[in-house]
Amino acid sequence: MKLVLISGALLVALVTAQQASGPQSNAGSGGPKKATHSATTPRRERPAIEMGMTRAEVRNLLGTPQSYRKYRSDDGRIDIPSTGIGKYPPSENYADLYTYSTKVNTYEMELQYGLDSSESRLHPFERVTLVRWTPDKPVAKSEFLNVAQDLPEIIALCRLGCVIQRDQASSVDITFLRPRSVSTQQQAIADRVGSYFGHFAESGFKPQATVYFDQDSVSRILRGYDSPSSLRTAMVDQGIWTPTGLTIAP
Image (cartoon, rainbow, N blue to C red; front, side, top):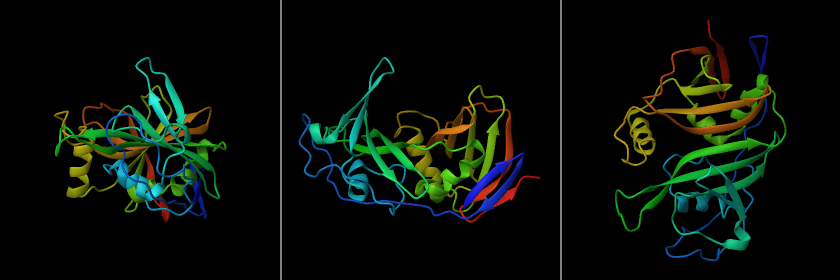
């Protein structure tokens, strides 16, 4: 669905959602190892990446990432082509980067991971904790739902409907998509991933997608969780969106 926001009214028109797939084994231990497959460009049709999914499962769906993104303590970052480095050992300090195109846009998709040591402290599982998309072509703020409709993970999140909310007290221009209802199983996954696999004592994390805007265009989209300790006192409902339609807030 192509959804356009004009002067407070939301108009709806049709567009195709896109997806991708491909194989790869999990990273080993020790130093960096040479990749057994060359970097893969995800195809347009692919299943959604689920929060808490292991890095090995992601590779089975998307293939070897084109690049790795390493974050530094000074908030800097460096991108390293996977063709030159191969596979890193399990770590939470680097993300997988994929770039792929749909009929709507081209996206950089970054998958960040956390270490789940609940089954083994010596060999923890790397699990998805955050997915971030950066669209290549500019997308007007009024058309941000076009991007939501183009991402399998957001479609899965909002399959039964998401409330569109804006935090009017935030200094950052953002909009949230939050499911109208969350099952017991979904809440268990949210608390497990949101608490960083038990490293934090909080529970009650809220599944959500966050859309960031810069100069009235979409700058990035995140799929993750909101902490129950986040104090958002100026949330305004703007409607309910599903991949098949939209209901305007009264």
